[in-house]
Length: 151
Image (cartoon, rainbow, N blue to C red; front, top):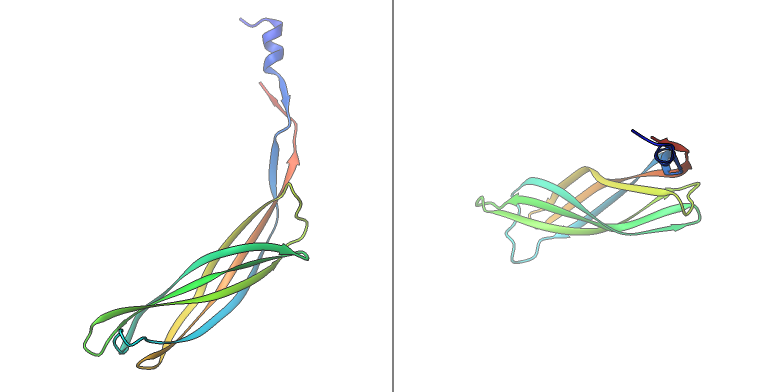
């Protein structure tokens, strides 16, 4: 079986770091823009679908706020008068700030961003308007020391 030395080796004390969620916060920002179709694309007759892809850029922290910048790329799928499918990509920059309190060097910060309420409408056969709302969610986790007995 086990002798006394092996039994003592099994009962070691460790201090792993467990992270507990301190808080979650959300902020929204609206982006909008207009675009004129280039000459090599056909005129718009009907918008079929609009999709937004977010390309987050840099995150900075200043004065208790986390600032996130990036680019929202609108993909507008449309049909011309003769039912020819076409696509137009429209990149728009965005910046969103979120209040962040109680963050230290041991904290873990988790970001997530998503586009909501995406819309596109034609202003003329060669001009369109796009807009969306971008939501950033910020979750902050901080370390807690706990004593665990491993057997």
